[in-house]
Length: 289
Image (cartoon, rainbow, N blue to C red):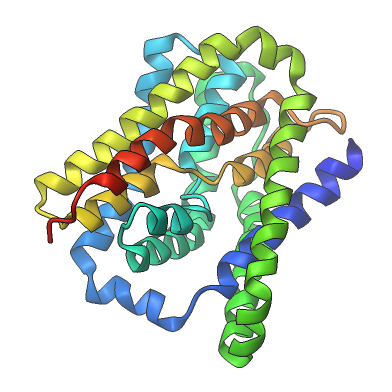
């Protein structure tokens, strides 16, 4: 388990983020300026709306301690790398999805450490470990920002190579994703079985409310149907692997994955189970603008 926590998890997340980076171009960041309003709303929904909903769900379900802090950790994570593929499947605005995933993932090195330090202290009280915001930020740079940057560099210098290896990388990262989720659940199997009804219900609620809220906010602001679908997907699908990888950096648990990682692992499963019917409905609707 020591090797899983200290080596496999960080390297796996780095590979996943490298795969994200190798699909990015400068144009994906230029869109942030060109489509300022819709991008800003999508980003704010990810950075602010999901944590607010998560806090409300925690209060509503009466969840406390490390599991509550774990739900908040999950809510602070950016959208999952798979949101781009899901947006494409739903006939959404894939370009917007790519830009949101990329920029919010890079911004997370600033937002996540501070928010995690607050939430762990708030929900764990006297049991909360001392968290170094600087150390956590540096770790996030190493396992997220650098791999994304390296992927973009290869895309910029050797686009043909990037095109050739990207599909293979997507398969590899898919396998790594499954292994990480299963490992996190296995490491906390007793807690998983004991708390599944409560935790599963809370996380399903979080996913459904987040996706519906994203869709409604985008509709109220007059965005196109493609943009609404994409924002809904971006706020509903989180990068659970980031939450799992950060958990042992926040709470050291004798070589094992801490309970803090459990909500991210469970959400990574239930978010697809609940999001799939919603995405199929989004896909079936005719585009309006």
